[in-house]
Figure (tube, rainbow, N blue to C red):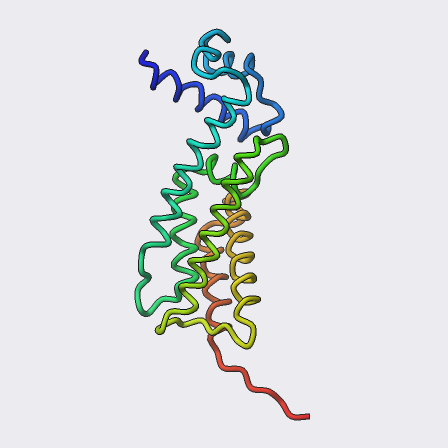
Length: 197
């Protein structure tokens, strides 16, 4: 087996453990056993456990970021609210690689510092995209008197809907999540009258 394929085999085994039991459950011995290889082969690819976990986070961050970038660079159809369109793209990306997305949206304790750095980078990118969508001249969702708060709330709602779907796709299938998202977007876009009094 080539060194690259061996590296991927080890990282795949590590990801499986992290997804099922969290970072704290990962040991070199567990990874070797899960991969069906010796600990020596793991050490040959990664100097230590920290190096293994950092390599895993780096690889999975690249995968998640590729999905995120695809979603945020696509322009939604003119007749569709951009928030629901973006969430649908994120759900599709997460469904294609759920273990990767769970790592970043529902991180377990004991992850390397790089995990939290990548999470912060992804969230910042997501917030920037929401700002772009809300500032677009043809945007369909008004921000109201407090755009900063609207951006924060939309980001939180999107994150939570995606987490619910990842945590329990049977209870929160994509159609259910997207229907609720579209309803919320439609309500936000309705003009609100204020009562005197």
